[in-house]
Image 1: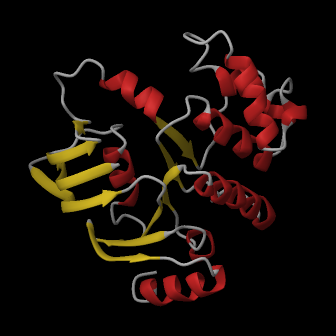
Image 2 (image 1 turned 90 degrees about the vertical axis):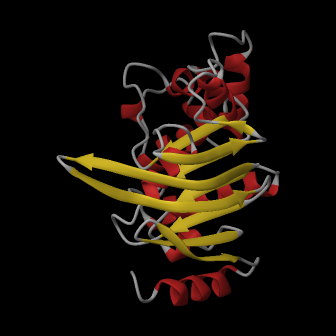
Length: 240
């Protein structure tokens, strides 16, 4: 479980302080698939970066099971982020001179002699086990994003963070990726995702709408995806 308490993030630009996130408090529970939407520049990606510990915060607290993610005195935090969080981005950031399997397993190889075995199992669960020995340049965009999900899952994270994971994919590939996310969530994986698309957001179990650094709508989603799409479109009609 992640608990956010009075989170503020401010950027210094010259003599000016620009507030990006404003006094946000919320909880994301285990097994939840929470989706963040909002117009470009509203603070969505900054929120994801702060809550996952990738960016420093200006004030407030972010707690993972009562452990502060921004405690600079805690030397174990980097390892905690590595092993408890998984990350997926719009760009898959594959290393070109490593195979798909090597990309997937890289962060686990240093401490687990069975990393490749787990990596192959994850690729199989993404239905791309046949691509294990291929290089990124030899596979499609959708296949690389599947591999990126496998890489994010290699350390069996508590929470999966996804920032616009389908934005660069065609409709079919995007739908395939979201079915994988849905399946992972049904198996108990907690996911926090940012997207611009109501169709993509409809796969979640919770929708949070951000405007100007504040969440002004936060609602549960049901299992009827079509109804979810209509609900989300109604929620964002004035800002997107």
